[in-house]
Amino acid sequence: MMRVVVFTLLFFNLFVHGFSQEQDTLSYDSFLEWVVEYHPIATQAEINLVMGNMEVRTARGGFDPMIYGNLDKKSFNETLYYDKREAGISIPTWAGIELNGTFEQNSGKYLNAEGTVPSDGLFAAGASLNLGQGLLMDQRRASLRQAQIYQQSTESQRRQMLNSLYLQATDMYWRWALAHTNLRVLREGVELAETRYNAVKSSFKFGDVAAIDTVEAFSQVLNRQYKFQEAENTLFKVTQELNTYLWDEEGNPIILNETIIPESLKISNFNILNEAELRTMVASHPDLQIVDFELASLDVERRLKAQQIIPVVKLKYNFITENVNDFEDVGFFENNYKWGLSVYTPLLWRKSRGSLGLTKAKIYSKENSRDLKEIQLRTKLESELNNYENLNRQILTYQQNVVSLETLLNGEMRRFEIGESSLFLVNSREVSVFNSILTLNELISKRKIAYAKSRYAAGLGF
Image: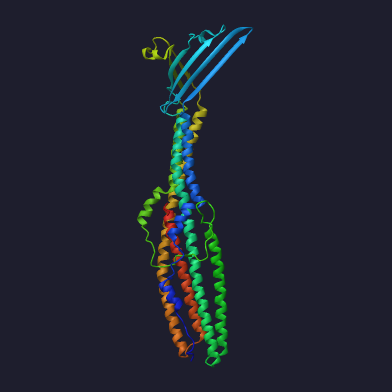
């Protein structure tokens, strides 16, 4: 009977109660907040918003007032042929009306009759209006509307990028937590095997156990040291990957200090998913919103193409006066005015009708792809929800399995103490307990990630 061998269940108590060390702990929430604040992808997501704003500003430039001036003078053989001067302003409006004003002053011996104006110059003010093509939509208004749609889509693109970053960072954090927890588990296993090996050697000296038992105990030490070394390598690699998500305020990468640890993997702090809410949120998924904005932009293009089938009918009218104060007394088509009407149209409209048909085909194709995308997103969500629930069931099963295996180990230890078992059987029972705990840790880590995947599938993030 080997009464001097001491078996410790310190590790198993450690697993049940969790790690109590709280100092230098990088919590999951703090990690995500830091990532979302300073990661280059998060910065790029914010830049997308700036790009949207700049697109709108660029498109609004199409409505900027335009001033112009022209000077044309010819003198030959001491004869002034002409001296023509003109300045003006043109103001586009959202309604499609273009306001304009000009000042013209001409002199010279060889001026065209229509270019003759009073010596003090001539003022004109009026507008031009498209009565046919361009009345409801023109290129200037279409560009601005599409820029505004793009500006709105950049917010969905930002959400999409941040949600993807949230999922990747979550996966990385809980893989780090799993690697760190498993290292502690295996370290306890090494310490336990070494303690047993030393006890077996002492018992062998007193003749209580056979020499083969020392070989068995030493073999367990070596085996657990090997697994511990593998776990160290895994933790190192995972930590290096985790470092790629940490950046400071100035955009420099951060190397995580070795003394910093993650949250412990606990079964008690699981979040609960609201499945009904997630199914509802799919309808506003960023991927679908981006497609909706693309459809809205295509609809603007369709309206513009439809306008191009209409004949061009452009009306121009200007009041004319020598003094700007006289504009109030000028009546339409009474005196001192000029006006014009331009009408033109192609005969077959093949180019415009083909362009409109192509745009409609793009819209139809995009609508079909959107319907398919929504079905795929809903299917993906149901798959993630099922995986989440399955992991819940597996964790409950493995919790019971760990308890059962610990009970078997305790029983085997009591049998060994009274001489009815062997060290080989005790080690086998203990290995089963260790392996089941490592599996349970992996399931807990997977459940944390599955929670994030379910939210991501519904279009949600941090």
